[in-house]
Image (cartoon, rainbow, N blue to C red; front, side, top):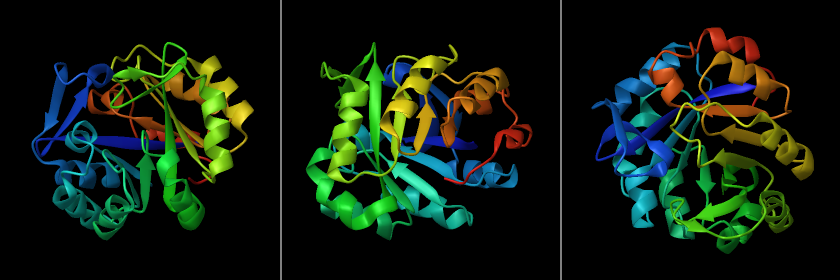
Length: 236
């Protein structure tokens, strides 16, 4: 199970939002490129970069900064935030993304999933047991595994499962919800949302997920990335 550092971008800075709320922002660095180099030096094998401005705008906004981050290390970078059209995908790959995360727009870009295969991943964002969209502001009423199966039928071969209610809170993870999701969908899953400690990593390692995205717990020293390498297994 790979531990993937998160670099969330807002206004050119590295931040974390609590539960995706713009009013609750934690600033960690004015230099996201230096942050990328830091995590590379700590042994990361992937980086998870989210253009928060793009997520709220509905289109990629910080492509120049994403390009600089991708060029700063030799690590592959998965990028999300506002990618909703084929042109957005092309721009993201041109900026250096190895993989692009699709949320709200995933069904509309199902043909791209078939064409691009592992270079796109669909995110299933969950709040209070149902899928949430549009920057986690709209509850859809859909059950997560049912939504995931639809995405798999469309051609997506890898999913990100995010507990939106726990994201950025350091509340800890709901390992049983993740376990159920991973078992039911039957494709590689990367988990995120609320991870606060190595105990959370140990719990997630037993769920069958191939990776976990960690943000605040890394930035605040609750998890040491080098020590977390003991959980590393099959590559993402």
